[in-house]
Image (cartoon, rainbow, N blue to C red; front, side):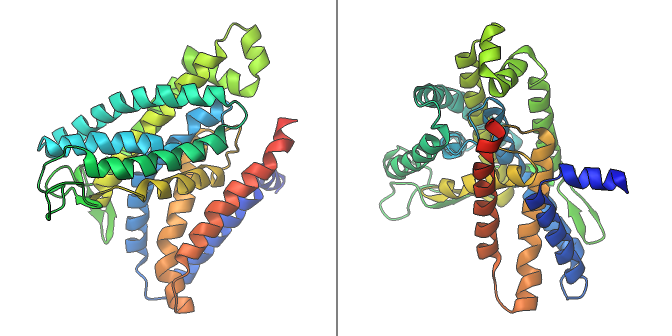
Length: 346
């Protein structure tokens, strides 16, 4: 019993509330006509398709910058990589991996510029990152109409110029990860390839933070003065953390898009940041510490909650309150982390 109380003390109260509410929804679902295996299948899919975007928060948090509210910057790089792959007519696994490689190259260049900017505004990284995210999305909303893409599947039918709002990936690299080694257990469908990619990405980041550079980033986030006295180039460490976060964000949107089946342009990248930040905070992270466990636990809790809330609560309340719940959970967790920050800094 004492061990149980000790465990509960280590769990954040908001995280505990989320899990209790999640368990309550599953119990409630058992008394409705909702298929629980179908809910679990959808949850596994959402966990895999959103997990890499949540993982992008880890490098900046551990470097002391905080959650990467400039995630749309990396997402734009990933979208450009996917668009170039589509323009070239690449399909299947080849098209997917070319998109990923292009995203890594583009996000590296963008991340260096973004990291340089954040270094100039120390102490205001989260606010400036948010402004930069909105700015890059607004700028690219113009560029999507001007860039010289000509693939008929991508441009507007009338006029033949400008990219559409939503581009289907069905004939390109849609669902390539979802269908890899996919299997069914009754009505439960497991997207093995998608989950393996998420696990592999987590493993790569975990190994990176065991290297000398990863340890330097960790030390910079924990105590920058001590890091400097130990010979760590803290500016370089923070820059690498931002670049890594930007790259993971670019790869994450490609994974998300292939699982969703569509590329979403224009204002869509703005709606990816808050769910990713909220997920890692629900997992027990703060704006100064984060781990792979926080990513996995938070993604599972947040995405499962959103998946089962719609069908279950719609039957109970005869209305859809999923969007309201998503906003309350997302913004509530971010507010909780920000108000907790001064206490942790002392």
